[in-house]
Length: 273
Image (cartoon, rainbow, N blue to C red; front, side, top):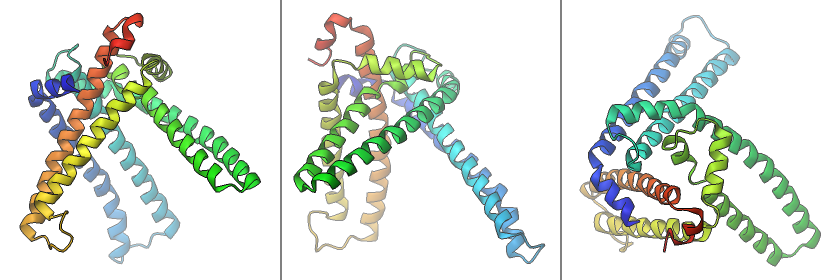
């Protein structure tokens, strides 16, 4: 955790620059997609040649799908570029990181699609199995235990796959199946330590959010009515906090990846000691 904080401070300039470029590109390209949908909508509303509801819906649906693809593509490229900057293994130049991040987009899309398919299939099987067990036993206690087991399983899978991004962005793995396999092997034997790290970071960020809310909105005083100035201050602080948390989390993932990569198999147990 301390290494991640040092990484973020040492490379805050390039990190902020890539973040801003990513957000500007996101708004610009998303706005471009929305603009392409306006003529059809305005033509219908302005009394021009009428467009059938099916055609209008089909056009809007295609535009929304394209918009989602653009958003995810830019987000993947931005996160890969930021993670690459945090790694310390590659040049921290802004242009180099962005170029490398763009090259990571197809792999990250492939990994996301594969994991989504696996999640749907496994979730469907487990959900049907749990429903059958609960319906057969009609035991509320068993339902709670199964729900707890499901939550633990989700956390376990999240931790085992938490290194997919740095494996693609830092190790330059371009096969999504290989990236998933490498991330799974890399985190083996360190699940509990990784869970504790992520939980601790989440707790710290949650406490920080509560403190900032209390300072700006009076969250600890339910009877207090926040003023407009407090609302504006709260919004500004949340923007700064959101950006800081996002950068720190990527720096944390990069730091964990570097430690796991540089540690021999026999010394993995000492990685988070």
